[in-house]
Every structure is written in structure tokens, then in C-alpha cells.
Image 1: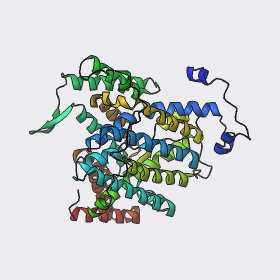
Image 2: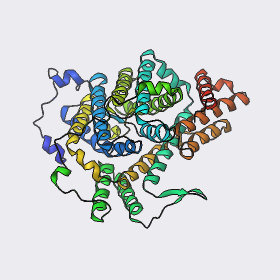
Image 3: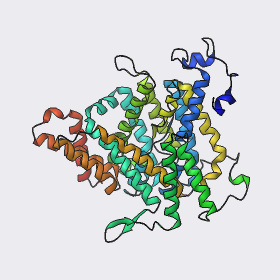
Image 4: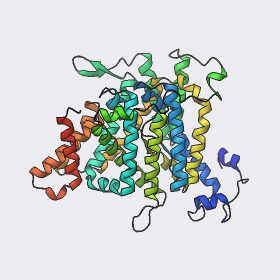
Length: 455
């Protein structure tokens, strides 16, 4: 029995047909109990809590004040995770999506030159679009219309893009006039700390240690302090504070008018495409693992889960953070027996409690979070196993989607070249039956975007 189990002990009330938790979460129907659900929630939180440190670091690159970015990350995660728990009754926690935050910071803000306020306006509008697409059922039709090879390629490409950002933040890859990019000085302290963090995180993950990524972040930060790379906290208030981080700099700072004036269609479209495939694919995988798919292949409450995600994305933009996603790390909690929204509710409460440790964010250097980006990217490229390389009209679009995301520093560009090339190659080779009508619309939209000067 684990220490957590001993701490919970047998004092927790058993599930009963008359209890409030039973009525809310249908524990008996899903063959689970309160203790199992709470333990599952603790496990999920430990595996995904790294986002508390990583997301603010990415948003700070876009110019968002780090304290406000931290507060927005946590509050948005709490809101949508609890909404997912109570509305959809899923054992699935939600937080700002890796990939979507990179697209926000490095493509939309730094790439397109938008202000972060305008980009938040685009995120809010995309949330509205998600909600409309979900309620009308179009969201599912769009996903169904995109070929599976491109769905997998999108995941792989985003993984490479995130990993590239991680290598760059760690100064393991640097700019070079002759070769564009080159290896950084791996003998200097920063890159050495990042490499150490990468090894620690990979080792812990290989050993299936719960909270491996969070442990790596904390361990690397402590070593950075010991080596003088960053300063030590000077008092307890530098570590723990009940003065909660302020949202003053980001709350309702989104510029919706600016987003519309910019001609934001291409950005909204890209947000929508990435969010559609990433979130829906994750939800499908997690619900299968949790046994929430019936014998006809229908997923229980999927519409409610997607609605919660859309509403959560609008709330996230309002608070000052990016679009939200169900995290694949929820699989660890489901593996521990999580089957209901009580698991997600537990994660939401733990995210809220994490606010008291908000001061720690300034003592987490980029070399501590960079290894996490690299590892998350490495995990995402596992989708390549689902790609068949037998058909050349599939190979080229897949290759362009994957390679152009990191090389152009733009997820949207990779999507555009992948979709357009797929549609054109299938047309030119007479394989029109393999082209869903959605693909024509998507490809034309991307072509128009290029003609209008989008990139």
C-alpha cells in the first residue's frame, strides 16, 4: 500500500447509491470508488503539473507578464477541468495545450507580429468557433474529412516543432549565419544543465516514476541554484505565499477588435485545425482506455466534453492564456483506476492549491523547462507509427507537414503545405475518391491565405 493510500486510509466513505458523490459521478456504475478516484487524480496531477512552469515560460516569450501568465494557466486549468468533471463526468483534466501555446507565442505573436492581446482575441474567437462547430456537429465532420495520414503527420510535426523550441531555449541549438542553425556550446553551464535535466527526466520516465517531468524541473532548478546559474530563494515567502498571483495584467486584455481587423481568418483556422485533431484524438484515446466507449463505438458524453473544452478555451483567453486541451498524461490516472469526473475534480483542486507555490516560478530557469519541451516533442512523434509510406501521394504531404513546421517555425505553414499538396496530388493522379469535400475547402482557404500575404 502506498503512502497516499495509507494517508487516505479507510476513513473515506465507500460509494453508495445514496451518497452525493455517487449521484454526481455514478461511481458504482463505472465500477470504481472514492479512494480509487482520488488516487487517480493525484497521479494525473503529478504527471501533468509541469505545465504550471512550462506554459508561463512560453507565454512570457510572447510578452505576457510571467506572474499573470502563471495565474491564467492555473485558473484556466482549474475552471475547465472542473467543468469537464461535472458536465461530462470524464476522468480527464484539461490545461493549456502544448503545441497550441507554441503556435500562439512563436507563430502568431513572434512570427506574424501580432500583439499578445490581439492573439488572445483570436483565441477567444476560436473558442466561439469550437463551440459552434461542436453544437452543430460540424466539428466531428471536419475531423472525419481529414485523412488519417495527415492527422498523424500533424501530431508528429507539432512534436518536432516543440522539441526544436526546447533545444533552442536550452541553447543546445543556436543561430548560425553560414548554416542557419548549429550546435551550441555544450560545455557552458546552461546547456549542460539542460542536458542533465533531459537525462534525469528520461530516466525517471523510463522507470515509470510518477511526476517524472515535475521532479526533473525541480531537480534541475535546484542544481542551477547550487552552481550559481540562478539565485537561491532568500526567504520562505519566495517559495510559498498566500498572496495569490494577480491576473491584473491579462484579465480581459484580449483585443477582439484587433484580431478581426487583422484579418484573422487564417490564424483562427489554424487554431481550429490544431485544436480539433489534438484534442479529439486525445479524448478518443483516453475514453477508450477508461472504458467509456460502448460496443457500437459510441463515446459517452463526447459532445459534452467538447463543449466543455470550447467554453474553457474562451475562459482561458479571457484570463490571459491559450487554448485548452485534454492532456494525454491523464492516461496515468486512468491506469490507476480513474473512471469518473471525480478524478478530474481532484486534479482541479490540486491545481488550485498549487497557487500558493506561485513565487517559485521565478526560480525555474528556461534550462529546467527546455528538457520537458524536448521530451514532450519526442513523445508526440510516436504517431509516425500510424503513417503508411506505401503511397507516394501520401508520403509527400506527410513529409511537408512534418518538416515545414519546425523549419518555418510555424505550425500553420506545415498544415497549409500538407493539406494543399495532398489535395493536388490526389487530383493529379486520379485518386479523387480519396479526397473528402472538406479537404477542398481547407486547401482553398490556405491558398487564399497565401495569396493575401499570410504565412
